[in-house]
Every structure is written in structure tokens, then in C-alpha cells.
Image (cartoon, rainbow, N blue to C red; front, top):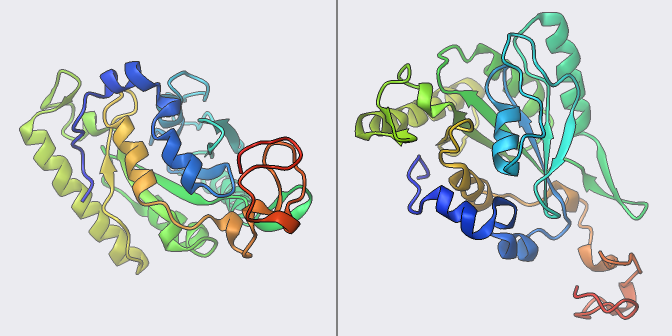
Length: 270
């Protein structure tokens, strides 16, 4: 059960390793066909762009502070060579805009992935649904899931997280950059409630969401853990593609020597 508790100071972790290098060895060994493409979706103001900036450690994604979404198209940001984040337009501003944005999201979810000219599977490996922790109305989220997300990607490739944990009780019980005991208990109950509501609305079993705050850098490393610990099979491997067919360094074909540990052309480790 992943809720909100991080066992090590996140600021200390950042100073020691740098967020881009966090669990880099795990990524190298488990992501067979990099990068792992993660699409972030949610309503306007949920904090998709601020989440990307928190994960990157720098402000690259534009953040909108009004009612209009700052992101109009799907933008790509690389955390490192193994993970790529896809920022999508926010939903809930108008039916006309939502229709256009949802078409873009659906099209992207069905986009083929090609490696050295050969079709493997689908580009988007996972979807991260970001929920605004200060909101109670989930109607746009239900429509997004039932009409666009689940028809185009398996539920095991979809994760849910709750942003803006600092605003969950109107800013109360948030002390020294983290929730106190009262707010922690509230966030735990909120995560369980969100899980139940989504499961009832969609008929899909989902993992209990993680609570975090992008603007306060709270639980950001736990967010990476949450994604990583619940990673599903890459959709890029959907067609049974062999990631050793090519050397990722020089691109030479390796069908005749799939058990090799090093590329015979450039010497790169496979």
C-alpha cells in the first residue's frame, strides 16, 4: 500500500544522487526498449506540468495558473535516457476543446513505435492519471477514463496519483513542507476513497493512488518509486519484439548473435 510516507529525506536524496539518476540501475536492467514513455493526463490545474518540472528538477514544462491549459499539444520531456514524460492538454475547460484534446490523446495512445525502421508495438507504455487533491468532482476524470483511456490501453498500464496534497484540507495541517498526523490520515482515507470511486465508475481494478505535492517537492522520489514498483510490460514489446535485435549504441543488427553480451561492432554492453 503506497500512500504518502517517504522513509528518507527527499531533499537529501536529491543532493546525493540527483533525481535523474535515482534508481538508474533498476531502469537500465528492467526497461528493455528505452525510453519508457509515460503519458500524463488530467483536468486543467491538476498539476501535470508542475509534476514534470518536479521530476526533472528544473522548470521546463510551462505551468498555467489560470483556467486555460498552458499545454495545447502533447509535449515530450526526457527524465533520462530510460524515461520520457508526455505532457497532455488539460481537460474540463469547454466541450469543444475537450473533444480536440481527447482526439489527440487517443491518437497518441494508438501511435506505433518503430525502432530502426521496424514496427515493434505502441509508443506510449504507461498512462499516469493526475488527480487534483482539492477537487471533489471527478466527472471529467470518469469520462476521460471510460471514453478515451481504457478503450485504448490496458488498465494495468494505467496508474493514478493525487497531487496538491498540501491543499487537501484547504492548506491546514501542512507543516514544514509535509503533512502532520491529521493530514496524513486524511490523505490515506482520500486515496482509498478515490480508488473505490474510480473502480465503481469504470469497472476496472486499480492500484491505490499515491499522494504528493509537486509544488512542494513532497513525495517526488516516492512518486518515482510508485511508478517503478507498479510498472507493467512495455507496450513497445507488445508484438514480441526482441530488444537485442539491434545494438542501442550503434544500431547494428544482432540476430545472428543474440546471446552476446557486447556488440561485435562498437563493443557496447548489450
